[in-house]
Length: 219
Ligand code: URA
Image 1 (cartoon, rainbow, N blue to C red):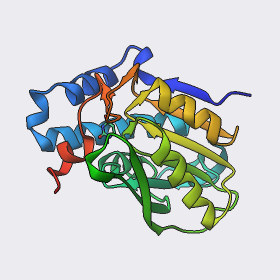
Image 2 (cartoon, rainbow, N blue to C red):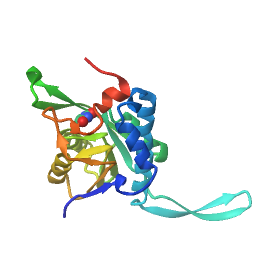
Image 3 (cartoon, protein in one colour):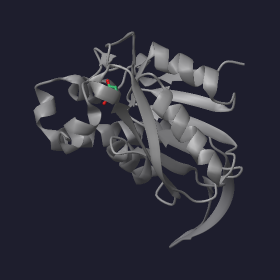
């Protein structure tokens, strides 16, 4: 069974306005708007993913009576790849506000300024993940190698029941890599699917460097 891809820009909604602003080089100069738009995409994805989760009935007392309501049976764990994933993560946390959180660092090392790179995973802060639903977010799914290495790092804390991979823009190559290297109990959620990668594995047309646009360039 192939891992399913949900591309939210295939539906008509205000979601597409946020995606347009995120990509637009003139709007990107406002880094606060860029971060907030990533967060808004996270909020909408959280809502869409919430439709796949389990709920249970609760009786709540209102000032005037008792109402039968539904509540999440359990919260997903929100897992994020540092640093570019932080605004998207915040969007998820705005909706799943009781969720536990996992942070993992994964960054590219270009040796001798080559186009080829290794991905280093150095830092993991996570609760127990055994049997839990995990939403693993990173704005750009380019080659897919950071996502898969981050997933493998998470396994040190247990095997999740289901992983939702959440990205702003995915490349076709990155989707293929995740489909080949992550379990069948994975779902991909993306704001767009782009066809190409540059020789340095940036997505084209993509949006540029998500981490730098959100937090400034690094040395
Ligand atoms: N990371 C980014 O920030 N942008 C890309 O296009 C690929 C990886």
